[in-house]
Image (tube, rainbow, N blue to C red; front, side, top):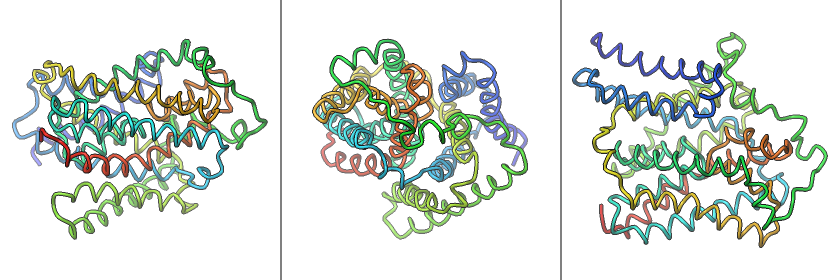
Length: 390
């Protein structure tokens, strides 16, 4: 590998480390979020004209391997058994949330089918991002072979509209929800929410990741993730090439969930953080491949479709919650986990002044990580048959 390209790889690997460090030091950067920062840095790098000719080869390599390697690491932390032990309201919040997203994305598909190119890919990405956040949306990009520009544009609109939603939730959301839904009824040590959950340590903090007792098992988990990718790729060769990447993502998801049942693997610390670090590399790299001149051509239809997915699913979720008498705090934490992803759970729980909903939000969000890939890929290929613009 020539020196310029080696430097390029190092740049894409080191930059997210710097972003994570700075995010931990400055609260304003934490509010912006590491993913959004990496997108911004990537867009700047890619459009400054400093990348060497032929850089796209290595950029494609990074985008092709980071998502498949990150998904098992994220899924290793899942407690599948806990899904079935959730309180009735929490489980209903998950199911009604998924139904709401599916319904709105399908409705939006037929509304905007004639005005959005490759809308079936957009539909798959929207299912992914509103069930599992950026990791699932990135997985959909890989599985459905979405172009860099379409991915960046869709995700940019998602980040903008999601930020508006989050501001509403963190300010007056609880009061508004209580107009329609019953208040939360505290339950002492419900599901161990107050005594067993250390969300900062388990899902946000990178502190101590290089200590031997953490790093060695974590490298083992990474090795398992590499093996899962290799096996999944081998199996995908048995299927038509057109569906190979989708098969790989589905197999990786399935293997990741299966290994979460192995106590020794589940007990490995910081697998979630390592998976998210790989997501940051992906975000930085894919943004550096986008042409800002193309992004400047705003697609109002795409913007409206994303807005419908965010706010439409939100409204339907409230309506279903009212029917099933789900309390306001549970709905808020569940929609936040699905729309904004699990890392936002503690922020929202803090605004609600309710620690007991943290575990509910976390389980709903991670459940979304697991099922989102299946739903996104399945729906995308079904809707492709109805898509007039390919």
